[in-house]
Length: 110
Image 1 (cartoon, rainbow, N blue to C red):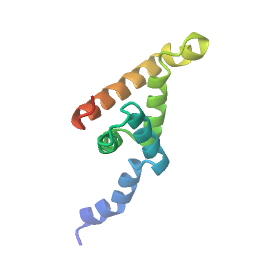
Image 2 (spheres, helix red, strand yellow):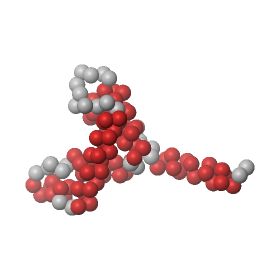
Image 3 (cartoon, rainbow, N blue to C red):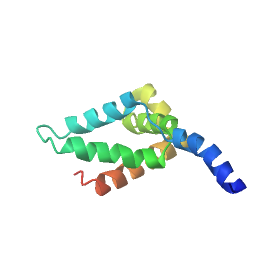
Image 4 (tube, rainbow, N blue to C red):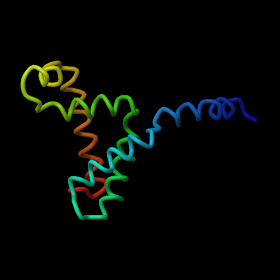
């Protein structure tokens, strides 16, 4: 067997695990997405598609941090300031919003 193939096969599981999301994280995203589109069963598939697209672009830990930052950008007062004011949080929220907008477009979510 070629040495480069052995190295690739040895590293492939680590790469695959880097983008694995826990089932609960996937379900939470899909349920929240479906909640925004009540009585439309097709969104089960569309929302599942969206989280799959997001998972290809962000590791799970980054997804949690970025989606939290994006969700809390509009939180009023001092508590919201922790998510609104730091440049790093704004950039992270923007990155998530951009990736999510692309996923929604790709998966036909209005």
